[in-house]
Image 1 (tube, rainbow, N blue to C red):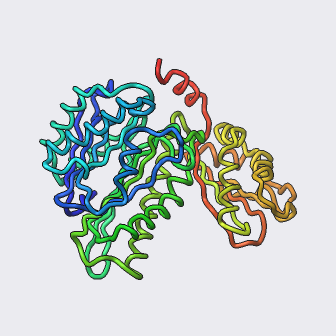
Image 2 (cartoon, rainbow, N blue to C red):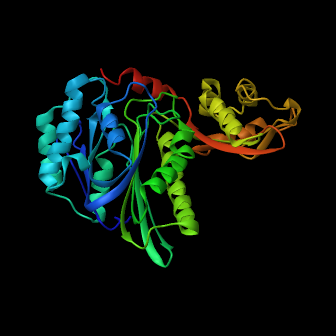
Image 3 (cartoon, one colour):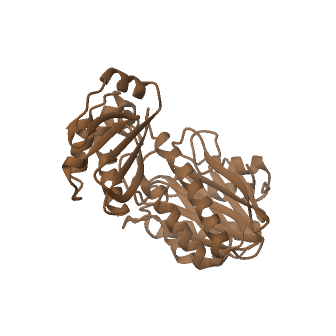
Length: 393
């Protein structure tokens, strides 16, 4: 794992979480950086989301502060005042303008932040800022809540003869739905980007990754994915070099995004749904998301049951027109439905393929069109129900 040039990080525990793991994270840049963001589409959004929306896209961001254990959502004027106060605390501790600080929060909705703990945590984190791998891992742990493990990826690649570093972290395990949900992410790089390109490529990357995953389809109040570019390596990217960079960001975001439903609360399978043969990619995504949202499909995968009828029927009510005589389906590479007709297959073999892996691949073809999409979700287990029925009590 590598820290891009121009950034320092820290993660500390200040008491927002009941566990002893980190719950305050800082990412601070040595100078102004280009920043873009993609946010929740929930009408009810947290104070930190409102602040980040107002401050991005920008070429003068200096820091991102994240707290976990408390969403600071549905907290009214005090919540906004507390979020602004967090930017002021970072400004004082790190000697940067308060208006150049972005905020992300995650945790329980509807509780006020204990600002005495937050103040202590920010000051402590500011004193531990570093650009080594330990600081990177600490910061990634500091943004997690119910995650089993932190989600962190990094890549160094040569672009225009210069070695560019791209590193990204995310959190999320529950309350995950398209249009993002209880999802925080930061992609940061030392490549040189302008504001327009940063916003464009981040939006495209999120659409193919974080907006293509679901656990239970619940869109949250705090979703934020940020892209930060220090510009310390190479000339501003354009043309093929910019496309190369964009492709790598998309790949890293997909890698991170898949970790989220794989880590879904109580999940036993990551389900990958590939839909092909549609008239457009948008149509394919609608079908894939519809299949992913079916609790009957999810529970079939939990039980290692190749119940293909649930998958095919879900595609049928997605609202997309297709020729039902051309529908074919494979589960883990095994053909179970071909051109609108049940295929002969050994149910025990397919079931065993599901039981012996934590991943289940559903490949659904609905015609001859070029439109295709991939969507990822988790299965639905008794453990998920138990966990979320006891979340606040």
